[in-house]
Image 1: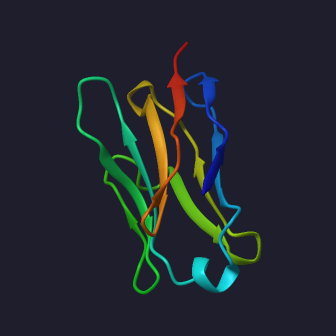
Image 2: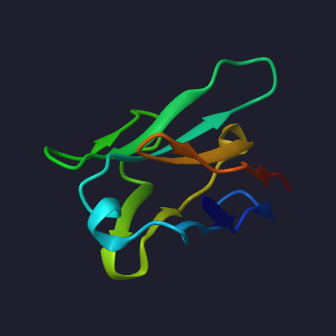
Image 3: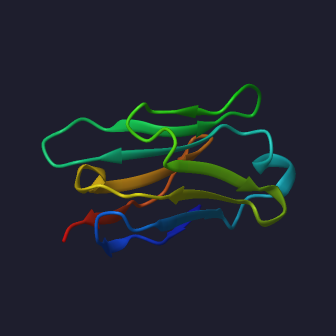
Length: 112
């Protein structure tokens, strides 16, 4: 249901954009759903990075506030996570979740 793109290897301080498209979902279903990005680092629990709810304000984890931005494009049924000023501790597998659907995960590695 969800197709993710982006990810890869970058250096500290670089930027990267992750995308997640609900290609098989109709727009009227996509629009009101909660949309989130999670990440999981080796040996750590999965953590919520950013959430864009159907209703209510946007949430960011303290660790990414001011650096990451979650956005949506309802017409394209897509969400994005713009990540700036990346740090080695941002290294993780990133997952998008839209409603009850979850992407396959993308590896993001921040290393010099």
